[in-house]
Image 1 (tube, rainbow, N blue to C red):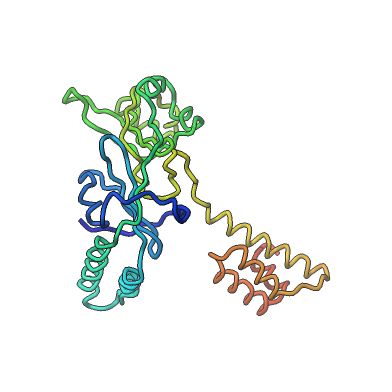
Image 2: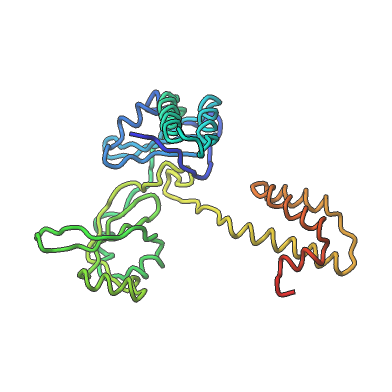
Length: 288
């Protein structure tokens, strides 16, 4: 099994509050996870986590990335994709990351204390539309067909997430109705026929899924991008209005506020210094 690093949001526990590890290494935790539903991943350079189940309870075991793993990941990222032996080197580098990752010691393991919906609560969803479920906090994921108990029966199944748990939702529609709803943008009108627990969410390795059931939604990168553009436009408008503005101080403030966009901010500042306020304003707004 190849282990792939995935991105997630960081949220480390305070020093001294980390529960004891259930496993010695990442490899041991992976071996104890269900083979048909391995939930594992993390942030390169920060952590890697594996979700396992014991006695009906779910646990997340977290390992902290070290310098050696960071070096192996960097070597993988810096391969020359134009080289004739790229694929051979890529496979070897991936295997090196995979092998070393499994040796990382588990720093701590934490139990998911959040309870899934009860059978009664899931039964109460029958007859509700998918749109109603989204209004109540469910997140709709993948969808498709599955065979029913009758060989000729086709079930239309949607994956739903509520908190830290995934649910399998069969909707009251045949295949033709399902296709028509997709074509007409009316999937939200499909109603629940039955619902069952699928298990902890497939993204349970992410620390933003807190063990108490609360979820930190990921930041929208485009929202911050829009904020940066708006601040640049405000700066330009003040300059055009005759205010004396310190471009370097403005850039430093902007980068401190949006550290993940430092390179983009530097590029904008260079454009401003090269083309001036008027030129940069016209580039930001082609209508000018």
